Image 1 (cartoon, rainbow, N blue to C red):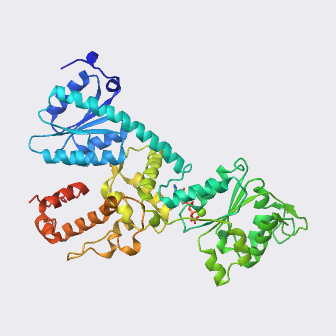
Image 2: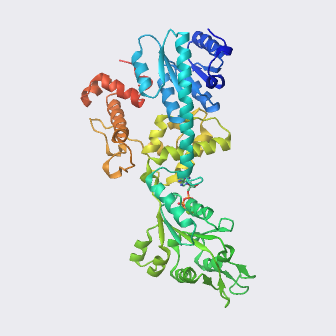
Image 3: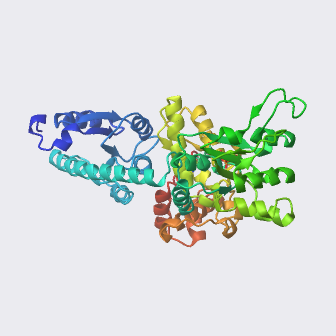
Length: 486
Ligand SMILES: Nc1ncnc2c1ncn2[C@@H]1O[C@H](COP(=O)(O)OP(=O)(O)OP(=O)(O)O)[C@@H](O)[C@H]1O
Ligand SMILES: [Mg+2]
């Protein structure tokens, strides 16, 4: 063994290592050796405690055994690759479990070492791995900067539909162009409206939001344009309207689809001339405001049905931003989920490292009728309720759990398994990656239908057992508790 003084690399001196093994003899002797090598070393006896420690501390490298109780080394590796992509992993395997080691490298482990561990071998491997970690970490930081470029302020999205929207926001922000936003409830219309205002030269001036659908028709006009004292019963003083309040800034008229015909006429005038008269007054007021409108229904259709004025439609439909439903941007679910998790974990000062693969799968399959708002609420609830280091399926709302596919008795996967052609939403990615979701669902359905008998499942799928084992390992499809290894 060498001492810290002889340690040749600067990278290594500052590095913090997490050593995971259920054998206390190994953790003790190895951590002693590594500390003498100049590293900071923490130890854990199983994958679950390691995940909790990863959530609480920053590590450069994790050195893990494969066979451990609770969460094993490969599951730990998967979690690290998903949630801490800049942490490098070395896997230690016992004699005769080389298959696991190969699998681990395929899953992204830097290297594997076999027991018994030889000092020189581990020393060199750790030094190499830490060099790799420095690269990973730089790469990760670059990616985060890119995320900031693509995620507008606090708006998260990688889906190309969202990227196009971000470009549109950038393009229109500088001008006074009227923007119409269409999208279901909870898709982010209000958020984007604010983003446009904050990116515009008007950002120092007021942003005034009016929910047209929630103000009684009789009051809407006075709310927006103001009124003079005595103009109607109850008008006991002069009131400044919201248009004037937004002077120099932006007014956001939400739920514009619910505007009455009479109000539509008034709106048309103010959009055309930026002029209006308060209720009960002859005085014409001019304002400089940017108008952003939102509708949760297709206005073109309302024009066809005769409930929305065509001339007003042409006026408001200068730039139309159509927000996709969450279902139409499936690829953004993990990104949004992680970002909400980070937000609530910080707010509530909890230690949660991420989601189990099962919980993430469930979220990917659910339809989210309430869109991003529903997802945000689900994550907030999970963060409040969970006592575990990762969010598991049990922490998700009942409707998300209930919506999961059930395996049919035969060899088929039912339509509600989440990849029927009619609800398959395309996010650009390599075919190999795209096939993984359906393949995992098929394997799971087949295994369940055969009570996890792998011989029978392999036969039905017409693949050999080894292939099935490999795929199960790849997708983390472990035998449920109570099912014995054949
Ligand atoms: N891309 C996104 N990134 C981060 N948060 C988002 C995103 N889209 C929506 N949200 C969040 O989801 C919630 C709902 O968004 P928002 O209020 O903008 O939806 P909306 O379309 O205006 O809904 P409604 O029609 O019900 O008014 C908000 O808390 C918002 O911050
Ligand atoms: Mg809104």
